[in-house]
Length: 336
Image (cartoon, rainbow, N blue to C red):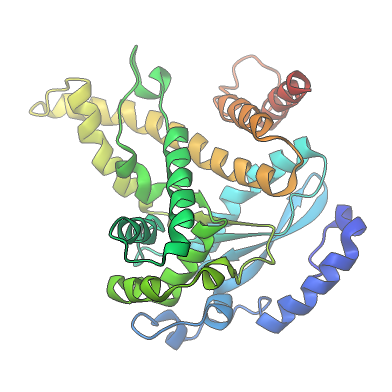
């Protein structure tokens, strides 16, 4: 697939092969028909219906052109995904010193559930022994991935606006949580999409699923795939979190003024904290996909990146981008 920037010349043969596949699947066209958009009950085909919503999104990264694909059902969602990904890709490329690979950002639709929908179904069916024995290790792998995501979604005292952090259940944040789609997580999402997220049909498909089918991946020609919840997902989560915050901070919910102050104080704190988590998830996905760093090095670089995103711009004489890059470079030296 010849979707390369000026700094990708060394892998020209790989990209030329991908160009053929890209044209075959029709990724370059953004033809959304009413039939495809309204496809909710009939079985979908990932290699055709899904690809009809994928369009190339050019980014300007350190004076180089980088091309990433975005799966979205509206122009607004596409702009949202491009804006989110551009900053993270820029920082990662600048500190990695090489291409961040050819990736796909999938924007969830507000009419569709979060990928955790099918992950929980798969794990429940594994506990009920309703999947093939050969798929049990995949269920264990998925459980480990979910635990890792949960461990990364943490808020400290600065996010909570006081001496103590705020305790928010992972499940409350899930609807707005972006995730890397890799391995079993990628295939299960594809199954859910093909079955239009219909729980009954998804269960039927999983009961008949073989290991060979699970290991196949129609999105494998991408170096990385990332799921991004729809634009309104955070607003819904924020509405669920604010009452939790007020209870933990002992705000009198019967005093309108107190509620307004709590919302005014807490909203930017939790929004900033969650945005750092979201960007960190994509940064981690890029590093795992294209870098040669060890898992421990990736973990420390991720921590440095997320912490640097607290940049306040006060008397630093640097832009936020310069500050973040500086902190990551310092961590690279420490790792070495």
